[in-house]
Amino acid sequence: MKIDIFAHVLPRKCLDALERKKLPGRSSILDDVKAVPTLYDLDMRFRIMDKFDDLVQVISLSLPSIESVVGPEDTVEIAKMANDEMAELIAKYPDRFVGAAACLPMTNVDAALSETDRVINDLKFRGVEIFSDIDGEPLDLPKFRPLYEKMSGYNLPILLHPIKPFNMPDYIGEDRSKYLACSVFAWPYQTTLAMNRLVYSGILEDYPNLTFVTHHCGGILPFLDGRVQALFDCNQVVHKGAAFDRILRRSPIEYFHKFYGDTVTCGSTPALMCGYSFFGAENIVFGTDMPIDSQLGLRQTRDTIYAIERMDISEDDKMKIFEGNARRLLRLPI
Image 1 (cartoon, rainbow, N blue to C red):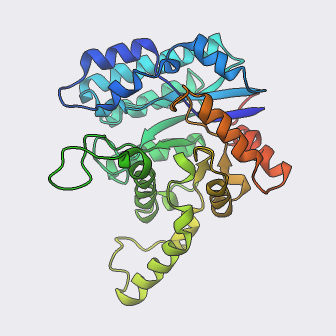
Image 2 (cartoon, rainbow, N blue to C red):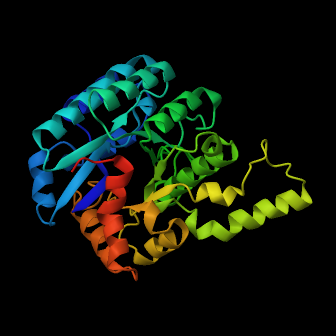
Image 3 (tube, one colour):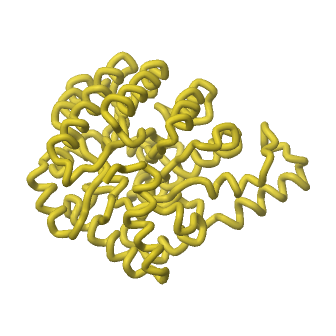
């Protein structure tokens, strides 16, 4: 079985609610994802899935994050709507969808905590999804710690998805990001930036059972493995640790190795081998980012499978990536 842990949907009622309640000037990504029918047209989606043997999906809501589109007063209603719709999909198509990661109203933390309890206890979801920042706020703010404590107690993962709006410029004086820099380079960087904050703030140290699955195989972190350690050591010696607010009990790189990475590298086997070298066979999970590609999900699914199959690793390790790690991490009853 191939268990796709990072596959996205945007159920029709949720899409309609986001369009209806969207605040002026908010995320332009909503207009882009509307053009991907396999986010909500299941017949079209299933025809693509049928091209691959034993493919099942763990679904989560696609971009944009709801807090980047609507105000805090509307995120609670829309998150519940999205989660109820995903639960209906799982109940109706159990041979296609084996679980879900919940959408949370993160600009209303109390409501997010309540919704976490509801989706895990009542809807039997296998985790939650959050984004690399919460409407511009970093993930290590104290107000988000109750969610980390709760997910650590449930021993279920948080899926970490990057976000940076296309209309956020890369340079002063411009009005938007140009030449695909946002999606190609900025999103993997945003993932890595969020991981950095989670490590150095001590969140992974304080909640040892807390697990994050990072999109795009850990962003740019695996490539910068040596740089993380070298610059930390340099800061300790030259600046006496001045860059850090907290002294961790173990080397920071050990906490970075606690993250999981998915296989969304757009079919690049060398990138997967870099991720494999960093995370190890136990901490990589099969994910495709379906259906966000030029062929409505076909390209990402096909190329990701082929990229894993071309990895110079054992068949046992490939089975862990395709299936075993997801079963263990999500405690799937299949």
